[in-house]
Amino acid sequence: MSRFRPSELREYLEKIGAKPIKALSQNFLIDGNILNKIIELAEVKEDDLVVEIGPGPGALTERLLETGCQVVAVEKDPVFARNLHHPRLTVICADALEYDLRPLLTKRAKLVANLPYNITTPLLQKLLPQHDLFSCLVVMVQEEVARRLVLPCPPKDFVAFTLLLHYYSKPRYGFTVGRNCFYPAPNVTSSVIRLDLERRYTVDDEEGFFAAVNAAFSQRRKMIKATLKDFLVEDALVLLNKAPTSRPEDLSVLEWVQLYNKMRKL
Image (cartoon, rainbow, N blue to C red; front, side, top):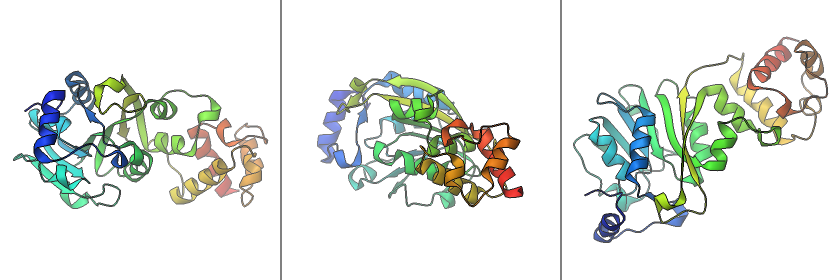
């Protein structure tokens, strides 16, 4: 059964007694071409270990398994979880935000998922630092989120999470997915992005670095020196040839790293 075809999907949902749950952001892909493009963007190969979060009825799962790879799927909905079966598929019925995948991953994996939009940000915050577990994350997110995080954006759209994403990964915009590619159709357009996990920057204290970044962006209209009063921010900005009146969005990711490292040494 090809579960991306609308008629067969509806037949399958009726058979197992399931229906899309809005509270779980369940919008199922019904476009085989989009499934192929996701597999292509992720460069899934036979010897890969792939983690899928929120497989639902399993349309993407089927395509992943057709490549010959091993799949670990984390599904919160018990109805879908107990109806997914394949010799190369391990299904975990759990909340992906809380479940520790480490014991199941025998090597670095790829995450390939049509993420439930209500957990996108917290889930990526959890996964991005895990370079030892994942080589890349290929995920579907809301288009406006994808453009804000991956593509060049105006300063007003630069947020702390953008910085975190670029700190931990090399992002790439994949392609747009229209609303009619889902059942039921969502209220927003979607995009697929690829995040190659790699350590692009180094700071003396990552926890302190992100605490400073979050503090600054929580009051983004204020100058950095007014928010981070425990540091000699103005002196560090001068050393970077940045204006003492700089606000959080005025600095690139690299400049934020350089600023923090200099502030700790002053």
